[in-house]
Length: 244
Ligand code: ADP
Image 1 (tube, rainbow, N blue to C red):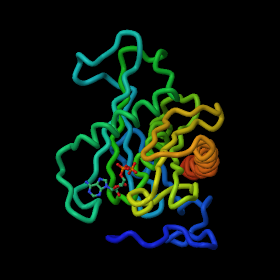
Image 2: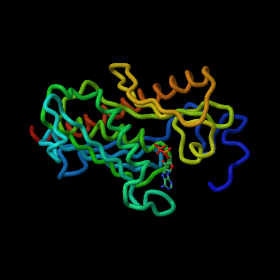
Image 3: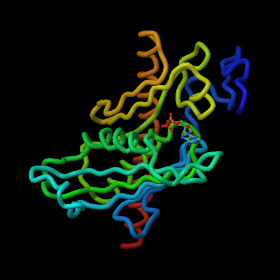
Image 4: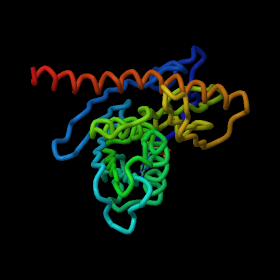
């Protein structure tokens, strides 16, 4: 979308991609998609397509990053050159370095870092196609990949954004809404523990709108959480059937 349409949401409350204000994009999740990784997951969140691979707990490389009293989580978020309309340089950009950091920090509270000293878990995230909200979708997939690697977790972590387009608070902005809208608020959340592990905001919201957006994002996370659990069950039920 090159020009801003008159309205990002019409009088009937329908957005430019046909969704209602509180509607998620369609989400598809698959666990155990890579045979050379300890754990892996693939997410399609709207038009976003993202792979996550997890390794560990294992020796930390380079060794000087090892911590004597805890596990070290390393995360690399990377966008493929073909993931956006105009070719993106394959070299890590400032944005990718920042997203790697915030995704790592959103996942750490779910891990028992102190129980695995001198070890590391590595998570590699490859964005194959981007359409807004990739950090949130990446968090959803990365948590599944870590769980699939068999790393004990307090809870899964789910990512979902809310924001504001025109004057309306909406759930799960896609690229055009992210770029042309008034605010974007990515949230990562651990549903069983009812804890937010990432909260960022781009743009501006009134206090009441902010509260509404956080509540909406949490509801979105809860819906995706059910799909995460189903995706894990789907893989392990198949393994069980093969073993029997
Ligand atoms: P997020 O993907 O978490 O929403 P941003 O808000 O930084 O992160 O980016 C929003 C969207 O902008 C991305 O999902 C992607 O569709 C698009 N985008 C990001 N980087 C680039 C880039 N280098 N070239 C073109 N589009 C990009």
